[in-house]
Image (cartoon, rainbow, N blue to C red):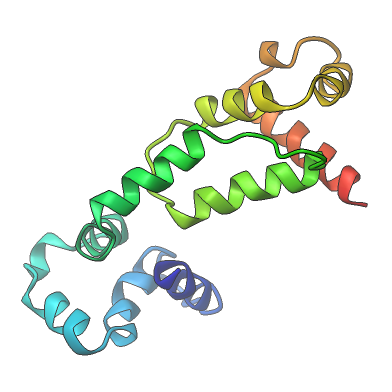
Length: 155
């Protein structure tokens, strides 16, 4: 959540000639305090020259492997709850992913997992909306279809 908040704040600042990845990298130290600030200052500054490197180092330090494994398992074993709508299930899966943004689970597996656990009626609706079998669509087309259908389900 801390990394997300830093990025969200940095997205409000646009500087001419400065790439979007540079803002969080330069402003991140100002979001740190106490032991976290000490940790960042003691890190090899030259090794953390990209936002990806910095965010991965931060997550490795402050996000325990046991918690990572538990959240990964929650994503992989995701199931649709009884009487849960398409929208509610999709949002819950996205929330699980946000809790562990560097979960490492490929998008195709997330989409497949989501589709597989839906009740038969929803699967049929999705296949009809996809003009055939959903799994015959590209990953991007499938994600767009899920977003569109869940938005319509929410409305």
